[in-house]
Length: 320
Image (tube, rainbow, N blue to C red):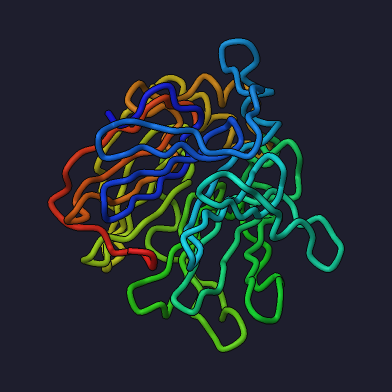
């Protein structure tokens, strides 16, 4: 295990020197050095995250740093799922807001941010429903993808089912998005001004749980986490889904699936009953280590980061 006493380490960034950065519900990120020492980096510490006292308030409200990326100068870009903003934080904690509205309108729940080689930012909006748990339904499709470039911020895809993590292939020809409540990955070909039409990539239904985090390995396999069932799967370049890990609670996952199939929002009580013991509410997967073969798992209810050595290396990210 990597780290200790972490709070909601949903997203993880790794650097060449072995430093790891994880999102932290106290309002910033936890920096974990190669020797295991750690330092909370934030402009202002929030103490509102307490799963033992009030899990609903902890997971649904307050500051919830979620998706992370490095800016071109090494600052940390934070998609804050609680404040509904895209933020930039320096490595000593100074924070400013990059995106809060689009054309003066609140965009919704800001989930994830990805930087490409042209230094454009791809930002996902999961839903415009608050709290987000009311959007865990197969009947809701109000997610969107926002492109931030020299022209400003604009929506380039919408009508998505709880848009979550996005990734680019090695050639940066396609943008892949986890459609959480669609239980699928969709992709869009990049165009000069945005994105082409959406198409489903791999199986149209990835099975138990709902998809959250995605990342490519060097061979083109797209690894994906299935939160609430705590599964880890991989979609091969041929479109086949492989099961890599299943650490969920079968009975709790059954209850989740029974509510989900009705089309109504799954209750928070049913959501909270799910999850395994290795990385509760398994939400993200990241490659790191000197050879990019160390796989790290992020969980919304985890307090440390499980890791293992993979037989393949990860696809280097733009900051690597």
